[in-house]
Image (cartoon, one colour):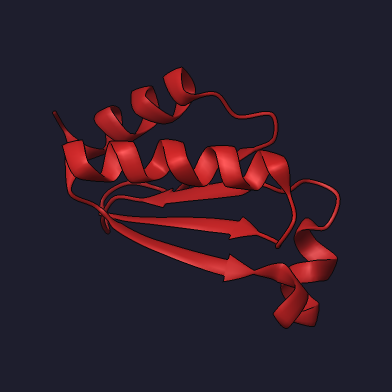
Length: 86
């Protein structure tokens, strides 16, 4: 499973979600990829008003899930658990 975090530097909400994701990564063992939206114009245009954005991509059989701020750890855990099949 792959989890993508769309964020930017100096974003408190992004930092909180990243810490939550790191805790969950230790438990569920997913790949965590972080994109700085300031480094990609298309990502900036898509997400500048909604960061942090977390995209959970389980596998080919399930559609990716995208969560937008505000995101809580309970919601993150529920979606990661559901998509991981645990």
